[in-house]
Length: 480
Image 1 (tube, rainbow, N blue to C red):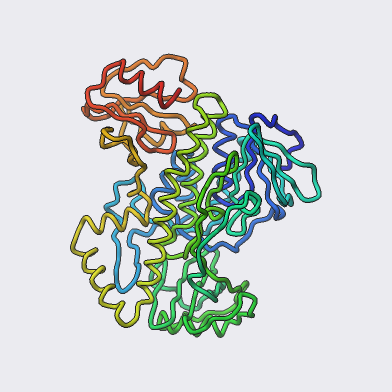
Image 2: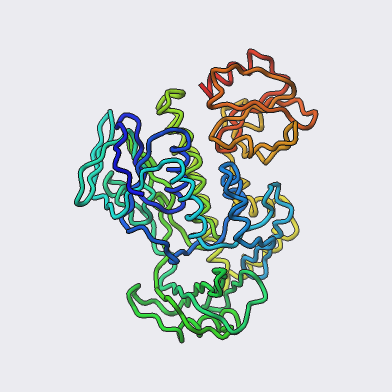
């Protein structure tokens, strides 16, 4: 899988890090005809060291637009009720999505599907390639690789995790703090099968989470507030059993741990996701607690936002100014995820005066539909929207659900291939010149709105009763 051919630096993108974010981004670019080299410092091997175990609705929609969501649905297990803290349960069955659930599956299943797509698209994979630095100017970026020749590219994207070499190379700080210290991970067999697909609870100073791998083993994530030891402190199964019993009431007969480790969970965010021709996405740009399962999902959406913009600029259909919108759109989302995941942890572990606050929030979510929709929209990702110009149609900037289209199709099928989709009330001929980047479809209903949907499934422009000149102007501005 190591490609010997170097793409021209004027068009190539180098992606650093082969986690879900990097694989989605690299695959998108390669599908669109952009030469991509993906650098990964580890050897090529499947790892079970994942902390991510769920895909939320918005990430599944993005994967549906790449024709891989159904593959993941086939190996994962859907969960329609999400338990958060203090008895608060969110019923996801009413989500306005083709995926009204969370899909429980380990991160490596997502990586396998995305890697296969990237390989088929022609991504140049280079494993055991550690980035040691980079230099950039107005024309491109040079990446220094340990023990190998320098590589040149038009743009570089760091998707290389919390300890990102790319972020360090461009001098960006990573401000924040350790939110939870001495979290224990273990993969174990259980004598007792839990009664729910995901089991999680916090009691007193103890928290525990159980999720199945699908091969008989379960991932345990547990933490005790009173045990603050270094990450390299050895873990034994007795500690895992004890904290799990305190939090969940029993240890389910844990035995035969095949792997155990200890880590700390940080809340950090880079102040900028772009420095010149270098971008950050996923954990390289933001990290937070595992609460709510939003980490991998947020990174996938970073990639979906950035990939089509890089493609448009490199193919000459947009000016480089378009790339500034990546920061404007994704940085506020990252900040919101840090706040919401942190709030879930703090409310789950509430003590003393915090308990009435938690009770009030649970009551509000249970009784007030707008509050419930907001909480579900943040956790699942379907509630985020991007800034829109003053006076724009209310749809502009909003996530577009999977609309039914005339002829029996649906929007996220039409989005496959990374194109814009123009949804119109009646026939419209957009001409041949944009066929490589624009699909035209009609509403299945009698709706009179003309809607231009970006490749990442957000509304770029909309109008009621639009005329041909209005549509052409919108296409020129957004599609090129």
